[in-house]
Image 1: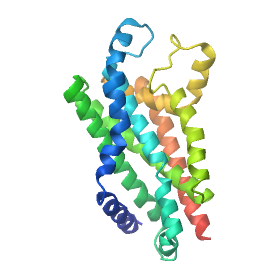
Image 2 (image 1 turned 180 degrees about the vertical axis):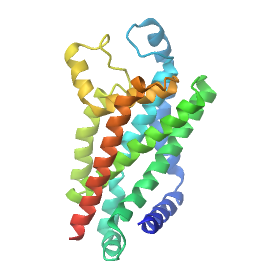
Image 3 (image 1 turned 120 degrees about the vertical axis):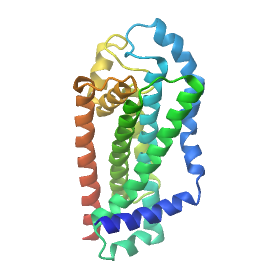
Length: 255
């Protein structure tokens, strides 16, 4: 399985490197939020009660990194649809290659891309905006980003392989991702003080709200179990379920 994973990863990574512009295109939206929205947050955070602890940059930067992984990895299924239409996927599936390896090779490529983009966003926040976050916390945040990317890429491949439609796939993603984004408190934290009770209650049902909370905790150097436990447990469970779903979908399609 490891050899199959490596071969699929090497193929996808080579294809990605032929057009390295994806790195800059992918981070364009978070950079715009950081540059145009971040300065507004400075005065809002300092003058408004109810925000999470930390500065505006330790609140906004980790949330934008999660947003980056959320959107870039969710659309990973498009590459699988291209492989499906061109017959590449069918040729891979008639080989004795492990179905888990076929999935994980693609997922590892998505994880590395998300981590590289997260590093660039963090470095920009350090250099241009004076982000003050501990290195240990930032490294732990990259692990969280990698798990988010693995979760969403696995789910995206499973959905793409189930729908097999370039029209239905983006429509479904947009319908799901927008409420997930708004209810996760990525742009503005949804706390019990700032939000009405009904909105706060709904946001706590969204699992990515807890993941964003854990990511923000790493950036402000709060590495206690209380700060990280809920988000970490939810994220690990989602990752396991998504990889299992993706693997089962690959195996089912082969049956």
